Length: 246
Ligand code: NDP
Image (cartoon, rainbow, N blue to C red; front, side, top):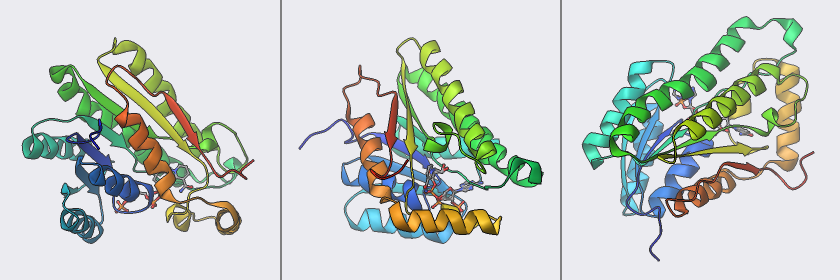
């Protein structure tokens, strides 16, 4: 069946695992040309091979979203390999959970650098291309943590909500030239919580996730839905969480 995903050139950051990987597989299955970025080369190479073996088109670049130039290189790779950029998916993220008065400043800075500045760098790399083309679609992976504020997730939620706010301004400024979508996952079964350093927070999150987390495929479906809409339809905000989540 023809769809509005087929043939689109899509850049995905944080594509080496979890939600980014699931998005890459789903979009490639639907005929998108995916350009994947993350730091772990082996994981990216394996994913590109898997997509190509299944008849899809994919390229990858080892990159770090903390480095502004890396985002430019990723977008350049998409434009040079496939001729344009239709969709920029800012998915790379880290989540460190702790009480604010524990003052884990290095963790705060990492979340700001990856989740907020990394996303801004992604937008900054994509927008000049979108401007020239007079079309484009930014999709940011946010979080339900930004919707329902709870203890231990203050800074993480803050980074996601800062992105939401900035993206909404971009949507209004774009005067119909670009589509801007925010997707807020709830508990999803990925490696994200493995990196939480605060042991109490990590154990609590992992226990809850084991009970209720949904598959990253659910988020991939939401991304595919947003992209597949007719060009004049902008899907703004989607929340995808386990039915049982508070
Ligand atoms: P994963 O840990 O599986 O994926 C995170 C991805 O981000 C990895 O591919 C990682 O790749 C990449 N990444 C991290 N830091 C950098 C960096 N500096 N430069 C480039 N890539 C980086 O977790 P998820 O799939 O769950 O996370 C994806 C997104 O979904 C995140 O933005 C997260 O906040 C969000 N989210 C997840 C939820 C969940 O329950 N899992 C809930 C709500 C939102 P590598 O290490 O190879 O660089």
